[in-house]
Image (cartoon, rainbow, N blue to C red):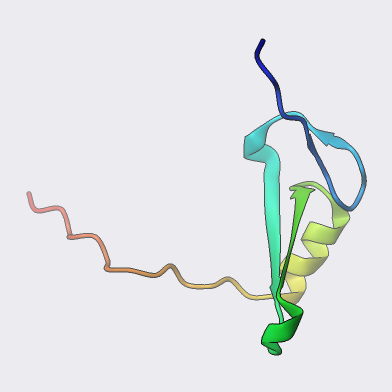
Length: 70
């Protein structure tokens, strides 16, 4: 028998029907003893919009892709 996982928003408690509509919020504390806190949310939740206005986007890591030569 197959099992199906249902993703629920940690802030509103609503179910998230599509995995593409999720946002994972990760909080890392300066004090390593507190650990890392991870929360799942729907991309349309007001808390996500508030975090996006207050925070900044982190640059991607790794090498840049090679330019396409024609």
